[in-house]
Length: 162
Image 1 (cartoon, rainbow, N blue to C red):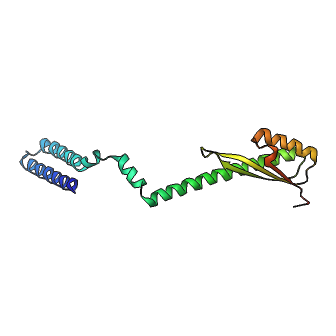
Image 2 (cartoon, rainbow, N blue to C red):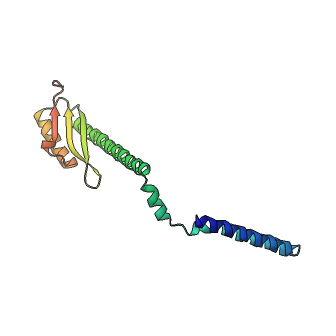
Image 3 (cartoon, rainbow, N blue to C red):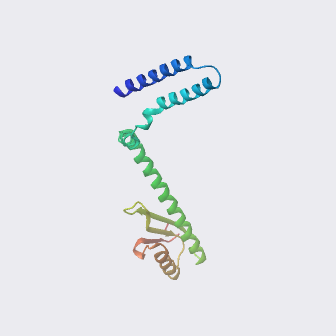
């Protein structure tokens, strides 16, 4: 409250000084320059409290409010989930394409889990379609090499059983 009182007092004093100075100035160029200078000084007096603000402290206070923190946390979770879903879809399309190159018409589902840094890492792969043993072994090796998901993380479902 003291800050507001001081600011209003400063603006009032600057305005009064400016009005008196303008009244006693001679007409012409001197008066124009005086008005410009007085106006600039008045603007500086008006904006002076902004120069003393601690923006980091203000940001920390706003971010500590429960609604803002919850909203930020929710936004981060939604962003991470969208990233995870996008990666899962891209990897599934990649494996399905590689399967097609091996002659396997299949549908693929990839499960990613965020690591300690929040980066989605593929942990499981499910392939649905008619797969021979040789094709399965070739696809298992490809998935293990390209995605780092070993045979224990891979599941193959025969289309007839599905």
